[in-house]
Image (cartoon, rainbow, N blue to C red; front, top):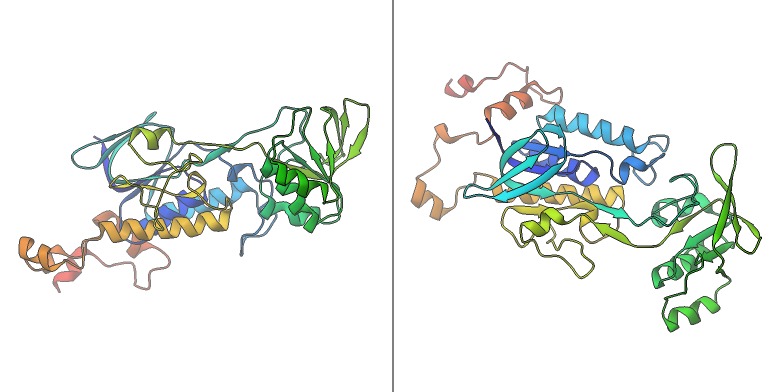
Length: 345
């Protein structure tokens, strides 16, 4: 038998998990189907998240979040969603060993950073993808930026806010930045290194020490940022007819709604800053948006005319399973003994 949910979240990063947290606590049967991995899972340390210490790894952060959402009553499946099909009742979601039907789908499928060719340091120990998260780590340290476009040049100039030692590495490729950007670069103290990287040195703790270049030179760096773009994971969205932006991210309103009824998107697959606090905020708004669109009450005047007034038999709208989980949860102020029969007293 295929399980039915009001909300099914595809993806288990900070945005998807926060969406599921809100929809579950707002009384909607919710499933999370997550293939695992993702950008957050790559983090060796967590930065810029109030209340979470920096020695928390990405995997630890996600594991704790998943446990919290499950404790409120959401179901979690570790699997890869291969197909979502629109039906008369909503959507049919197919993963490897999981099939569910659902009223709403939330796409939290993220994107993949385009990685440069090796040699490269380890992600989190010299290779970094979030300037706003990690620039603070490199104050007064030698830093590189890789790339040939305007974004790479601008990030290199931005890093001068944090350190006086910034190199822009084109790795043997011709620069593609605009004439205006090129003129800006010439007026900032940045060395543009055109030779390809031929070798790399690491410290004993695994952090980057230096790059060696094709011309025989060696330059020390503590870390840097590759700027080669992103590949948005939008195959499922496109199969449903969801509208994309010019940069291939998913177009959404301020509560994550797409142009397709019942389909929402949140997190890195949508426009905006790609950071955990931002993703969590988007997830909260998306969860609330789903609640606005799913909640049974208040019943409008048109609905009252069609269905009649709300009676005691109609309430509460929360499912019996979630109702029981809520009463038993440690955060509930009751004695944990409440039952449906108590409404008749």
